[in-house]
Each structure stands twice: as structure tokens, then as C-alpha cells.
Length: 266
Image 1 (cartoon, one colour):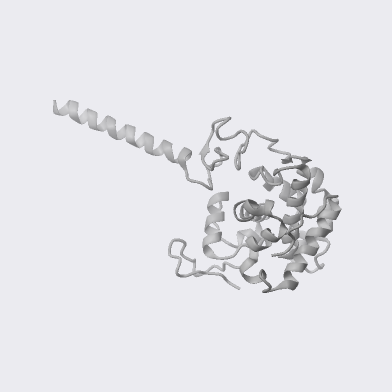
Image 2: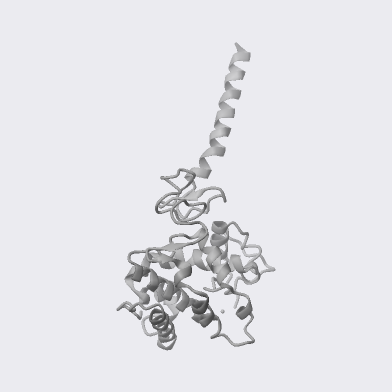
């Protein structure tokens, strides 16, 4: 009887262990950050279901909607919009002494999009072009150490600096930690990777965009400025900086053959 009871208890423990190992991969919370072999569903959960996770609306991972090697928009391939000439036009605005001039490549950008296949896939073809123009307007414009020592959940590494790096210049220890968790890179302890690995650099920018900016893209370019740097620039705090961003946005919209939206400033 004791042996039977012991056997039952062991079986229960084994089942609990299996379930404990199984559940997190599929019920990891909103914002995902799934394992490399799992898809992030439209609702923000990890899994491998062709329809439930990897199909329409899939945000990250081996999504089946859209080509994994040719990120698409509602207006066609992103590569057909962000051409080498368009990309070079952005890079060439930097001075010859700028380190990023030879660091960023269009190939790295398009490769990073494989993890964010919903980028530029919002609404109409013109909406997609406006999102691309908005993203690169902020990239063109966008650097102290930002360590919030009161945030004990993401303790700063005393030997590291959490300053702005990459196309969209993420700052603060907690942002580096959240972004790193999502793209599977330990950025809290190696934030400099954003400035030394071009693939990580673009993934960092795209993850920040999709999480912090994408939800307000349909409210106009002014809303994207507020989402990125509103506390410093909006409501008349820094109108010249706002206008600089707007100028880049309208320039890129014109190059892509689409009219800018009406809400340009914040």
C-alpha cells in the first residue's frame, strides 16, 4: 500500500514537471519574447499552431503569414519600397566621419524584419509607406548614461552604460532589459552590443518601434514623435527638433510617392 502510494506521488510529480516545462512556452505573457522556434501570436502568446500562433497576425518567430525571407507589406515587398537607393539616401546624409555610415546596411535591416513581419503592414499600401517614412524619419534624426537605480527589477551593471545606441537610440536599463529579452540578447549586461552588432541594432530599433510607437502610428506622425520623445519635444518644448523630424518625414513620403498625414506635429 505504501509502495503504491509512493508510486502515485512520483507519477504526480512527473506530470507536474512535464506541465511546468510545457506551459511557459505557450502561455508566456503579452509582448511575447518567445523561444526561437516559437511564434508570437496576434494576441501576444507563444506557440507553434499554424493558425493560432504562426498564421495571420503573427508578430515574431517562424511566422507562416508572409515570406520569411522577403518581409511584405500590404503594398508589396518592403524591399521594393526600401530600395538600396532610398537607403543610401538616408546613410549619405551622415558625415564621412560618422561611425554608423559604414555600420548600417540595408541587408541587415531587411534581415531584422524577419522577426517583425507586421512592420509596414498596417492598413493600405499608402499607410505602409507612411509607416516606413515615419520610421526612417526618426532614425535619421536620432544620444549620457541612463541608469534608473531605483528600478531594482532591472539592476544596472556598474560597468556598463545605458546610453542611446542604434537607429532609435534606446536608453535606460529597463528598456535595454525588456528589448534584450524580446530579441533573445542579454542587453542588460551587454548594452554595447547594440552598437557593435548591426543585426541586433536593427532588431532593437524595430522592437522598440513595434512596442512603443506602432500602436499610435494611425494617429499621425505627430503621435509618433510624442511616443518617442514627447516629454522633451512636444507641447512647445522643442519646436525646432519637432520640425526637423517633420522635415525628414515629409521628405521620405515624397520619395515614396505618398502624401504625408495631416497630424504632423505634437
